[in-house]
Length: 137
Image 1 (cartoon, rainbow, N blue to C red):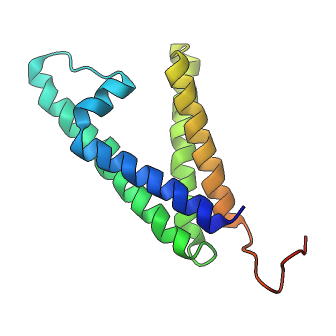
Image 2 (tube, rainbow, N blue to C red):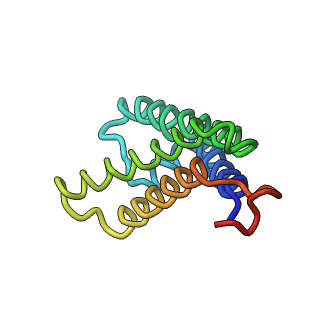
């Protein structure tokens, strides 16, 4: 598998997730199971959803796409993106350990985050095929 393709696909998915968070925070809150406790807290919840699931993920996706252009030259960008996804996974698993089983969607999100993290870390450290190293292991 090519690190450019892996990083490009994951970056595009992350960017789309971020744009969804920016444009449809109510849908994102419903997806992740958030509900404001009062009407007064609704605006705060919308702002937090736009900031985290929108702004942060949009920039993370754009940064990952930027790293996909030249994975070897932008290793630090891809490594950072992979470690951020891994951090989401670790935080989720810590929550599962402390708070209990979150249900099927919590596990699906954990697998998603672990897969994105591992794939981006791999893309950051993988050697790109070049005429000099094709077929050499």
